[in-house]
Length: 111
Image 1 (tube, rainbow, N blue to C red):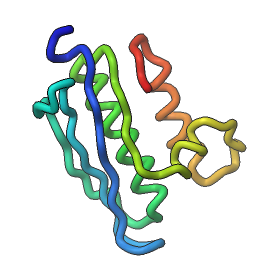
Image 2 (image 1 turned 45 degrees about the horizontal axis):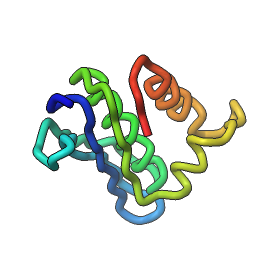
Image 3 (image 1 turned 60 degrees about the vertical axis):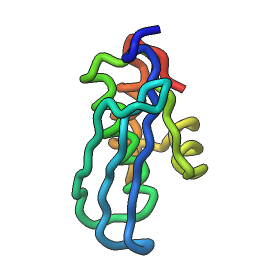
């Protein structure tokens, strides 16, 4: 495998349950070496919003870097549950969840 063939990603930050949120993370290759990273001020929201924005921005970065295999790491079981189950279209995070799912469904392998 080449250096861009398999990548890990980590992210997410929130101040309290409802407050200022940001997202940041790092893309690393299979050896743990740095590929790219980001830090982004999101605005006001909840911890789960910070996690999901981090996931979205991380996947988007990996896609734009032409990564072929991506392993997503998060410590948020709630984020995983929301991404893995059908979401009511009226859910407050439905648009963000759909955007993440669209990125994951591209022509690559994402775990």
